[in-house]
Amino acid sequence: MAEPLPNLIEEIVADNGNDDLQSVAESLLPAEHVEIATLLESLPVEERLSLWEALPDDRKIDVLVEMRSDPREVLISATEDDQWSKILTGIDAEDLLELMDSLPAKLMELAFQALDDQQQGYFRDATQFPDEQIGHWISHDVLAMPLNAKVRDGLRRIRRNVPQHCDTIFLINRSGQFSAAVKLTKVFGAPEHLPLVELTEEFIPVIKGSDDSTTASLQVQRSGFAALPVVDDTNKLLGRVDILSASELVNENYERQVMATAGMDEDEDLFAPVAKSARSRALWLGINLLTAFLASWFIGLFEATLQQVVALAVLMPVVASMGGIAGSQTLTLIVRGLALGQVTGANLKALMTKELKVGGVNGVIWALVIGIVAFFWFSDPLLGLVICLAIFMNILAAALAGVLLPVVLDKLKIDPALSGSVILTTVTDIVGFVAFLGLGSLFLL
Image (cartoon, rainbow, N blue to C red; front, side, top):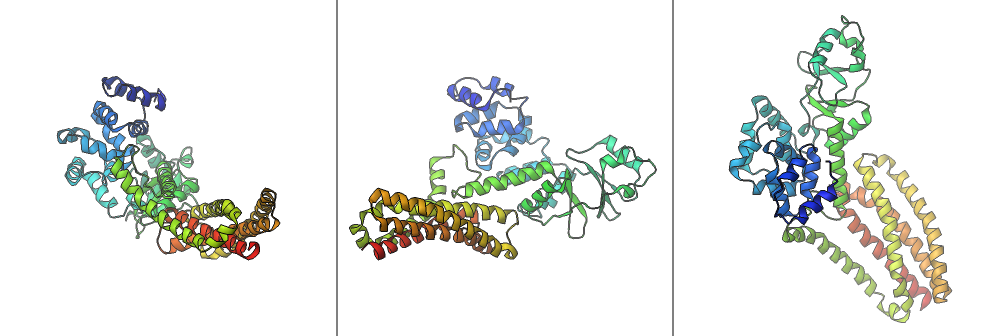
């Protein structure tokens, strides 16, 4: 995109949709599809629809594929039925898999009929796997040869076509089962009569179609290969996952986790209707309200203490905040470890011990700092002692909860990135308030 995205947004929005956007659409012709998709997602709905209409039909499918589902569905709904036959020209199975959750049944049928016989077969094979399994997202553009092929055969095949992000030839037997892989760099310069099987790699990871898509994608990223083979339960070669597709799947998973920590969907449109946005966010606001009332109820148990020692009310937010921050740091670390498969029952005890030690060190340091500040602020050594002990106890409790909560939620098949932070905040608030006010009642009254 020649012009920076903020400048384009300002230029289009400033026109208020009154000027012809054809010139803007023409300036986007050299741009990547993902850049056009990002621009469309950044525009208010009226300007987005105007620019969408100005785009050439032969680019619209590729742009839709790169968009999030919510803004994509706005464009699909606004497109006239008689335009789809042109837009769907040239669609392939991978594109349709990306769009299938956004297209209504009528358009899905039209898009499926636009595929050739081979692509229809690929689509049917992919839909046998749910979208959380890697078999749903494989590429069929594979450089594969028979197990008895020679170097000359490999060179001839390479000259004809090499798929993008391909650095190996996959060797398969007569039954189509994956057997080995040969690096392209080994083929060049090798004697032409030499069998390819003599040049195979000692080890190449093989992915099952039923493997988790994020786990498999991370395996591709770490493998040192540009793509890895994907096989079924009988070891028959289904296709491959290349480094680009793997990176996209990992990035999508990361974005999903980041949005989930706020109780939001990663596909939400920046300019979604107010009612829809309010409805989607209301659930977690309601859950947060319930947890806040729970914390308030515990505070109410110490109403008499607060009435007599006003300084406790002043310092309560400090206790809750320190516990919340300490817990969220641990929680984030454990959620990431679970997502990467690094946290298991075997290392959980050692991980908990380490986090409790970290919490203990930070607890001592910051408890002393805050205790000294409270002592000089209110000229009360007992108050300084009370908040010192409460901070230490809450940071330790936060470390423990930060480790255990995501692990327990994961065992219960509840996304810890989605609900962990809300529960953790409740735990640290309640522990902090009960410890602080309980110690206040004991030492200050």
